[in-house]
Image 1 (cartoon, rainbow, N blue to C red):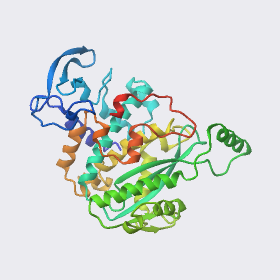
Image 2: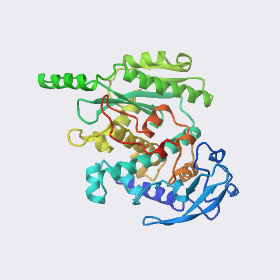
Image 3: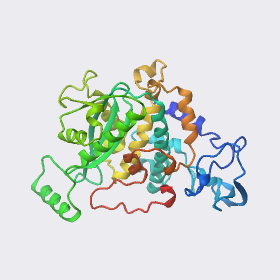
Image 4: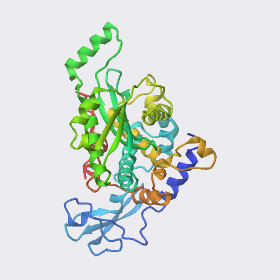
Length: 398
């Protein structure tokens, strides 16, 4: 990953510089009130709908101008539309991304950055929401493939008594990650009598993990895939999976699933070589194990909550799809072509989409997210019976 860090730094630094151009465009893109008609995107030079409303001073950002909407009376500032909305201490977001995709744990980051654990996680959540918006826009631009691979990546959070399955949909030709879902599992495998008793006690206290969690997660992903194919005017695709029975049940419950998706199943015990139809999703599994501290050696570093785990995986998804060269061997020869570029998105268009969102506050009501992406945005993933202990700020829901 060290060879990728200069590339990621150069790209994001270039994009984040002057990402809010207050000289050539309106200082505020739209009203921050979702119920106001001015919440929709305005013309870049239209400044007739708001008025200057004083300013305030902060230690972090200095003088910050305020404005008032002429339609609804809502007041807001320039800071309202930045990624650093409600932040008291600016940080280097690019440094956090570099460390995240280099298998660095958050405990390690606190020692080298001087930031608190909670502060780092808060910034990752902000980065995640921006990158989900970018991925949503990029889905509209890429040329979808006619073959996909789907499988589950097993991990755990809190402890090994709370295993989970990250259901991943990957393009077979590019290894681009289209979607990731989450489902909690019941602990399985060989256990001692003491461990079996502890599992029973936890299930009596917190509740038993639902038996159809994988089925529901895959059903949601495939439902969105069918709608995505319909929007892209693609008649049908091939879906390669292993022999997990939940995949068959999920596909049978998807509207238009049988007419649009050709389901092919292969043994998960076949050699994991490029000739294997499940190689794309196996390759992504290996990347997660290699580059994400939560999954490298789980007995030492593991996720403390499912929501935090999905936030970090969503950030890695963006890097894997649009910032990381598809093959290290090609990168050594000077070919930095990403998976997004392989699917027909030119580099300048990728920069344009990232520039549109990076360093800005993104609004949930203005993003076309899939259901599981909204759950990640709102930190909705939970282990059964365990509360996150956090209150989600109102501005995240807007």
